Length: 452
Image 1 (cartoon, rainbow, N blue to C red):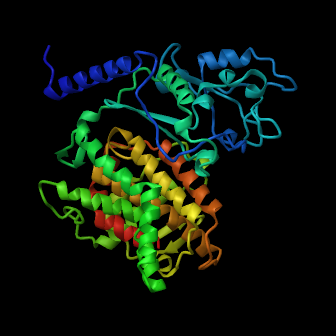
Image 2: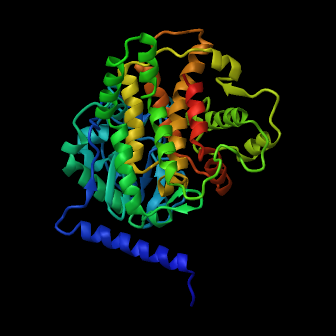
Image 3: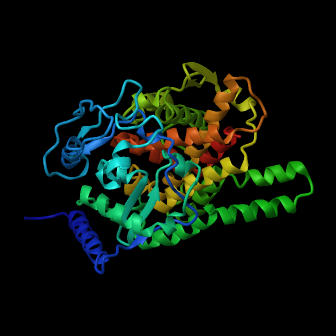
């Protein structure tokens, strides 16, 4: 039997990854990397128990059906698919907890507490509830722990630092491993940009620089320095805007692009005569529809209409418009609208969002859509810009101009974005389209300007 060289390399990598996991548990402790500056404790808001289905394994179902919960009348457990008994990964989830008419979990008490947890402890809850909001990214150099911004506690950075919760994270990771024992992302196929490979060790060196630039301390110091060195308010405002998260990301992508061996105009889409700004507008329109649908709860999968985007790129409309909240908005109106200032708490949230995506590696390669490092950084920059654009659209519709944006507005936009990224499932065509359009740091910079 003959194997292609790439297949052999992939098999060797997966074997090494499994061995690393086994070795990392020798002595009872995994090589777990935990981010600094990220806090979490449950806020008791009940948000994670609303609307979204809670998948169950066979063991979850048997355990919950055997519980006698005081003052609770059980509703049917809705089967969402026929899984395979004893299987792992997504196929291990065979059922989903029933929801009440108001969309809340049937085990949620009037004061937004889990009745299963209250009466039987954390271990009795469904596996997915015990995992949330934590995420784990296995790599050849260990496992990177992070948390989902779909959680209110993570959005507000409330509670204890994750670095002080190592034992709990270790137990949660063991649960994660029991559910996904075969998960071994292939980090051997990383690319700096499409067509140029990138070794994992080489990537980790680059990542150190990325995380340093995105850290809160770096941002605060730079912002303070730029403000104190500026004698005019206008100059100070301009300087501080350069430290917005999306601009840092596109700047990092541009800086990393210096390492590209085969120089080419990444802002020019091969075979297209469409103007770059029109391409920008069409990309923003497509991503806005995918990541910010009118009803996020009705959309259980996130996909970009690549065919429609391709047609529009080849034959662009006379005027590109954004579909938002049941209406259409012209880009000229969006350009002419000035977004009010985001307060320090909101800017900090956007910075933490980007920092944690980079730390967890859930923005490129096997972590997200197979994108190259540069396209992944630019995509991250663009989706942070999208948060500001959505807020601009909301305020434009309500005719609110220039006032400071409430933190809650930004937090809910980030929550929706996180949920959409979690269910993103991109075809090969979509991945190719994103790679081509997002290899350009200039495009990400122009979209950041649109978000101003």
